Amino acid sequence: MTKESFSLSRVFKLFVSAMKGEETEFTTGSINRAIVLLSIPMIAEMIGESLFAIVDMIFVSRISVNAIATVALTETPLMIIYSLAVGLSMAATAIVARRVGEKKYGRAADAGFQAILISIAIGVVFGIMGFVFAEDILALMGGESELIAEGVGYTKIMYAGNLSIILIFLINGIFRGAGNASIAMKSLLLANFLNMILDPLFIFGLGPIPGMGIEGAAIATTTGRTIGVIYQLVHIFNGSSLIKLTVKNFVVRIKTIVEIIKIGSAGIGQFLVETLSWLFLVRIVAEFGTEYVAGYQLAFRVIVFTLLPSWGMANAAATLVGQNLGAKSPERAETSVWRTAKWNTIFLISVAIIFSIFSNQVLSVFNQSGIVLETAISALRIICFGYIFFAYGMVIGQAFNGAGDTYTPLWINIGVFWAIQIPLSYVLSIVYDWGPEGVFFCVAFCHSLYAVIAIMLFKRGKWKTVKV
Image (cartoon, rainbow, N blue to C red):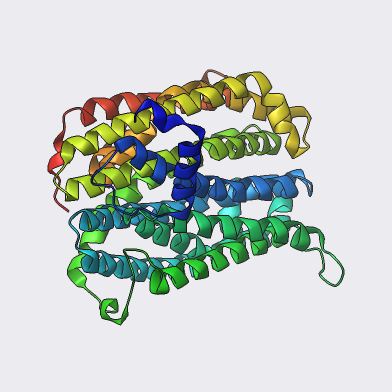
């Protein structure tokens, strides 16, 4: 960009364009402009997703420590479903972006419809299983009998409504691949706005509406996400996006389904590997008591709140890589990745400094004290030291995914998060008696290691030759 590009009027116009979603194809023109137009709505989208967790925890923390721990023990295995949603979303973004870059919009819509079919099938199966085995899930995660009795309703509702989670991620992945990040953003903001209104209403009650406690939080979240999905469907069938589903797309295409599963399975594997690693880490922390789990969960919510905007920038890089590879411009794709990573690093360094100085003030919103607050502060301060590396790791990992090379990040995840993070966390926390801080240290260290390995492999350039 030229110096005049940074005038306030130009910045404002660029911001408005990004929020409106006026541009959907980014294979030509300024790379900096493309990053901004994609990143702003994607960051807003990710903030909207992270606010679900923050808002829920703010209200749930006013019920009881058991309620906080129930959310932690429910959502840790629920992250397996998130992994399916994110993996399918990766595949949808990669395929749709590549087709858009090739200007084959009909084939992009075909891919979107097949991905939706797969998502519905998965959501129904996991919804039934989670609802039936809710008590067993909480017990397996180390929940005590009193906690299970209080929180099993929350767990049942969250699993029964998991289809809304999968679809809202998946359809947003379709919009992102098409370069229409604005619709993805608006669907999340709508869902989150409804959740913010319904959470206190259903948890504590008002007038004729009875207070439902922790179950009310699950109902509010599921309702908000479901309405967000309805908003997405309206736009994907009737909107002005490059991707518009019609009756012609209502055909089961086995070849496309296989392609989505092939790319998506490795994407699912990436998130699943990291999720299962987090599951084991929570289980290790649970050895020290419910209060430590609660503190760890509070810190995790704050960390997610700051990392998801970074994922917004990383998702922008994925779209740029996919579209530019489709347009036969691999060098433009690579330049987009390095520039996005630079801006992401600046953002996360700023956040790390704030957390190091004001962790107590940041966590005070959850109205906790004692061991819960002390654990949360410790986790936040230790983990944020890895933010510098997190920034590059996120962007480059998503760049591989945007190229359709979902297997490279998968193998890095297996090596770092399973072969190193899980055993090292156990040894430091239990064997060497570091306590929960052993887990926090391993999180920062292993995510930094992931970034270093990803950078080395990205520079080799094999991702540029992947066929989708």
